[in-house]
Amino acid sequence: MREKCEKLSQIRMFIREITLMGSLKHERIVEFIGVAWDSLRNLSAVTEYMERGDLRDVLHALKHHDSNVGSGMTWYGKKLTIALNIAEGLAYMHSLNPKVIHRDLKSKNVLLNNEYEAKLSDFGVSRERLVANVNSGPGRFMTPGVGTSFWIAPEVLLGRDYDERADVFSFGVVLSEIDTDDYPYWNSGSIPGQDNPDERRSQEQKILEKVALGALRPTFYNDCPPGVLALAASCLEGRPENRPSASEVVLTIKELIRDMEFDSRHPEPEPDEIATEGFLSSA
Image 1 (cartoon, helix red, strand yellow):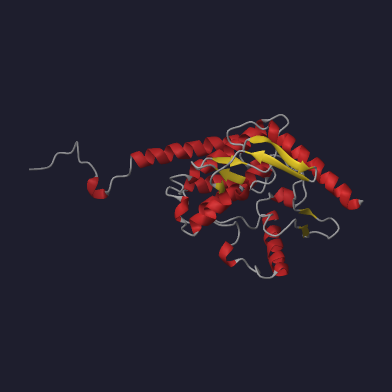
Image 2 (spheres, one colour; image 1 turned 60 degrees about the vertical axis):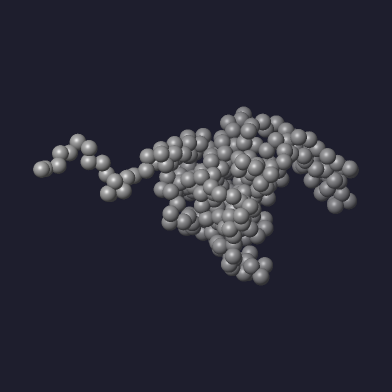
């Protein structure tokens, strides 16, 4: 009987999810087409087809020099536009009344079409979140699963009230993924305890405790553009009120794109190429 009730509850949650998906209409949100089923126990949401798959897989392929990724996957190419697309999707969701908070923003939930245009996906209302375990004492956390929690804002990790700025923190973590082509906080090729689930879970908890306390943030490469680093730092602020809104993030990225386009058209001249027009040479 309990199993049947749990399945009915899952069906209700899925129906709420597809109702939400159907209400979101924006070019940066994966389009909801309909529902397919052969029984109430086998329901599927039908969405538009995104040829490139999810951003996580594209970044993984890029890190391993997969020729299928194509050229231009740099901050001065497609990466900044992908970041803009993600921020535009968040700005739309946060502009609704009532506001819609994604709550699970990560590269795996960003889909790309053949032109590398990004759209947000996965709006499940039964979001697994890591929260404070009040029965375990201070500093103890409940994890919903290894590898699923690194995008969560500190206030959510601590079980505090949160708003749409939690999505902005997650966006800052995604910027780290886009920059390094890797998972946040640790390298995917050498994950501590990857062959030992208990050790890996322990490592994850230590990382999340540091994130919650503001002692750890995801890393970026040294050659990451300063403007991107500054934006990421503001998104990753520990205090939600100090983070920019998604709309402000959109404006900042558009400005970065304009600056980069200007710099590409007007490169700094080499020292021996500096014009001497206006100066008279002595005879």
